[in-house]
Amino acid sequence: MFDFCSQFARQVEDAALSFYFHLLRLLLYLRQGRIVDAKAYLATMPKAPKEINPFWSLYAAFMTFRLQCYYDPNQGLALAAKQMARWPPYLASPDSAAYLRYSALALFETYEVACVVLDSQGRFGELADLATCLVDLCTTYRHIVVATPLVVARVHIVLARYAHSLNAMDAAVTHINSAFSLLLTETPAWPQQSDASLLVLMDILDVATTIAIDPLPELDPAGAIVADALNDDAASEIPSFYPTENLLEFAAGILRDAELRKLIYDGPSKEVRAKYDLYLGKWLWASHALGMTGSYPELDGLRSFGLSILQDCLTLASTTINCSNTTAAIMVLFGPKLATSGKVDEGERTLTDALKIAIHTKNVRLQLQIMVEVHASCARKYQAKPQSVIADKYKKKLASYARKVLRAQYGSEAYRRLLKWTLPKEPTTSDA
Image (tube, rainbow, N blue to C red; front, top):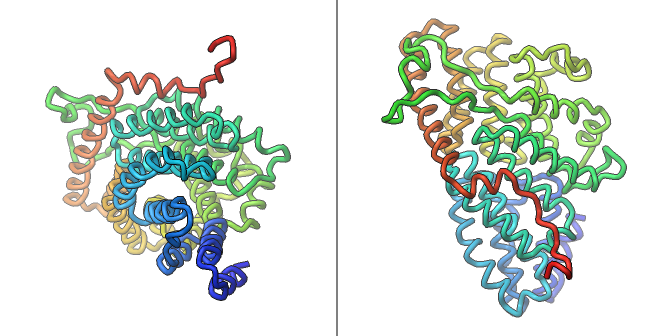
């Protein structure tokens, strides 16, 4: 199919038809999760011919934004702002009539992806604003949303991330359950699923295996951590955070399905495969730390393969997907595994590289998780001074995160609305 698209795009004389086949090849790369190839191919694609509907040039720019978010979320946010400015005028124009559904969904996905980035960076006020735009968009284009499988599920996942980050765990669980229920309605023969459904399932597992920064440390009036809230001996223990046990149990119900695992491993998408192994690795790590070993024999049997799973996952993620946050999330699990298997120096380099990536992408929770592992590595080598430096930076980062959460929790109408959101019922004739 790739060869056919390439050959046809080169040979056809009609510029519009040639462009469509170029775009088809790009979409095939995305279906296979070959993000690196897709990004490289997009750079060589011709611009949309001026004589065709403006939708196509807007959609090409949307794909540029979408792919950039994998590698550099900060640049992705800058492109997101441009996308948010471009789509509404087009949607309001007569040109959009034939492409209304795809245009509305492109704007929806722009909000969705930007929300994920803002959540990772701890920018909860901006996240609430964009999530509000997202749910308002669902109301405006309700007829498109309800007719497009899994769109409402994806909204619930965005809101689950938001609730989870602000430690509103009951709301997070409710949103995750809603998303999974909607996914199941689109999956009549589990575990057989569409490509889109598998990506949504990976997002559900992402939330379910994300660490919860809870309880938050006590802060003084100046916003610093109260001295006794963490051990004031900076070279001693600092708190570790893990996913919640109830969400880990939810994730286990999905991860232990051997038929689903085979479907993913035999499937076309390298992105889905890498993400599945990442969330499996996170589950194995967290469940062991929380004393859940033995609760799920189907998954416990995979523990001995943990190092090779993460190694294959990291190779796939770095060569095929090149998603910065995904790569760093794998490395923070892989580094300690290397160290405990005797490759101490390699493990430390892996953690150092992971921290550099997380700092570049401004992923706050990932930075905290990596700092805990670096601190533990220093402790094993009796390196008191580096351990003290890491502990001090950790406390400052944790205090900053706590301040952001507390600001977002209180006095926000958007906060209360988003935690409770469900798609409003369509007004009946009598209501009107």
